[in-house]
Amino acid sequence: MPLALIAATNPRLILHKNVFRSIFWGGLIVATTFKTNIIYKASFHSFSGAIMAANSTMKAVVIHTKGGPDVLKVEERPIPTAQPGQVLIRVKAFGLNRSEMFTRQGHSPGVEFPRILGIEATGIVEHAPGGEFEKGQIVMTAMGGMGRQFDGGYAQYTVVPTNQVQVITVPTKLGWDVLGAMPEMLNTAYGAITKSLEVKKGDRLLIRGGTTSVGLAALAIAKGFGAHVASTSRRPEREQMLREYGADKFFVEDGAIAAQIKDDSQKFNKVLELVGVVTLKDSFQCTSKGGIVSMTGIVGNKWSIDNFQAMEYIPKYRYLTTFGGWVEEFMSTPLNDIVQQVEAGTFKIKVGKVFHMDQIAEAHQCMDDNAAEGKIVVLTD
Image (cartoon, rainbow, N blue to C red; front, side, top):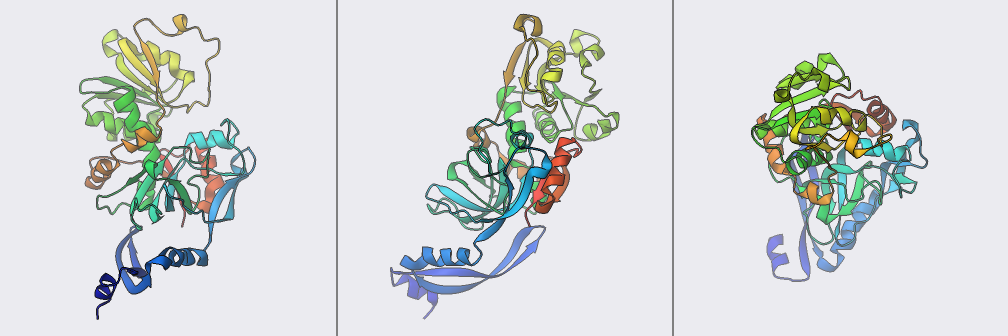
């Protein structure tokens, strides 16, 4: 009698497909063969647990004390267990973010060491006790306390709440390096452009820190809305790259761009400030009457404004806001749409450098040095 019929006629039995062999191409599973068995429903979870127990440890990047890149250590850790309302993800790649550098340096209040860092991760569903996801689905997650309140994405496995996970449902041949670059970068870029600045067709947008991963993504998103976009870089040779990404105007970032603007007609009604407070005052001088500046990044590594006096600092009829994407913003980021656009070649994801987990100190040093020219991605395998 066929196994499916046997299982269907006995409510205590369940068909279980055990992966026999998977074929990978471009980092993705393209073909899988299975061995099918019948097991009792009551034993299914213990059966799955036994499989996990056979390989119960993982590699993870752990920080025990604040410091430079060398404080990040690759260690063997138990694979975490997902509880109802959580999902266990087999991490394939994770991006690096400057907030993780600040946490490493000891600047994140409330973070206790030891900790597995990482505010984002991309990978495959391993187990969701509540049935919210199917094993093998490609997923992305970000924020929600990852790498701060609980262990994050710098590991081969991570457990996160189910309400901060997006499933990539569109077919894709993109590699894990590209997929791994997306979650937090797009969360910040899309949120800043659409929610903080509300960029629309005809807007004049200035992006300070244009060659950062967020700056490049924001450029692509803003051009998609029909904005006129100018971007900055400290290095003149990066103009060509920014032009290729769609920039209409290029400024060499010297901290005094306002001096390069000849008259009010050349000013900008929207400014995305990714360098931070070191260029913020100059950004206001680049802003037209009624314009808005969104403080979204701190590439300049300075947190506060010295001797701040609002009426002297901010010109009249200009507005200041900030953006920091959390779970709500991440879950509203159209990741599937952007994956499709990247597949079609209409949206570019700039992966700067790719490292492996045992190169994590080198990867963080690259981030510290602003040497990536795009998103830094770490592969876990």
